[in-house]
Amino acid sequence: MNVETSSPRPLPLWAIHGCMLISATLVATSFIVGKAITPFLDPVVLTLIRFVVAVLFFAPYVSHRYGLPLPDRSALVRYSLISGALVGFFWLMFLSLRITTPLNSSAIFTTVPGISGIYSWFLLRERLGPYRIIALLLAMSGALWVIFEGDLYRMRSLDLNHGDLLFFCGCLLMALYMPLVKILHRGEPMAVMTVWILITGCAWLLLFAVAKLPAISWGSVPMTVWLGIAYLAFFTTVVTFFISQWATLHLGPTRVMAYSYLYPPQIVLIEWILYRDLPSLKIIFGVLIILPAMIVLQKGEKTD
Image (cartoon, rainbow, N blue to C red):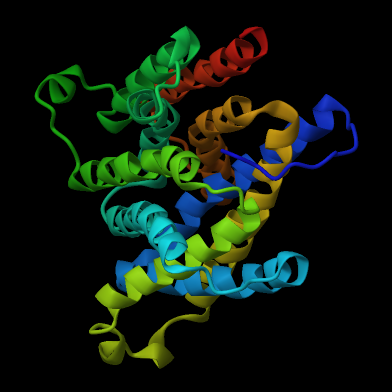
């Protein structure tokens, strides 16, 4: 992803990687929080509220630092194209989490960097490189192993959970995000671009949610749902944005992207801490297949 040019102070490498570990942990928790709150609101409405709250958190900072003038028509079209992919991903994420598990979703999400690389190869003529190909193969193998719970018969017959299929379709949209940003970025600060992507995303969502809003019994929505939405909007949207943008200046986009391969083992750890619940050894084996993909990408970026 393009980032704003600046002259950041040099920091120890361990501190930068430590911040990225915090960011990856926050993103991993979003699958668990999403699973907990999605039964209480329609996924479109839930996604709309998340985007609105993220704008409320993010826009004042962007307005104070850069100003936030209304973009022209061509800029609004650019932002709307990007937000369409983002909106589709988050809607399908909340919809799929009604059916599938956070671990399955996180395993499927590890295919996003590789698919994004394939899109970039077609759209931007960027070199995919052997390291990305190896990482994609590892992520796909591990994700399939987790989804099918190590059952080779189910794998051969493609006995897919409907929720897993929905989320994979969402990941195909999410993988478009990075290439679209590169194609449609026109030199504006990334924070400005991001806030307008969120605002145009709200417009997309409102089109689909407007008929559903009057039917919702807002008073019966549990407080935990509102807290969950605020958590997702602030910590897993705004905070992770700033960490990843800052870390990209030091590590490069590929090494930052590699942290997404940590989501499945982090979810296993978080669910064990919260619920003392561990998946079967077969599923843990699939998680361990995914993990080396991070090392492959980190090493590949340093040696390229």
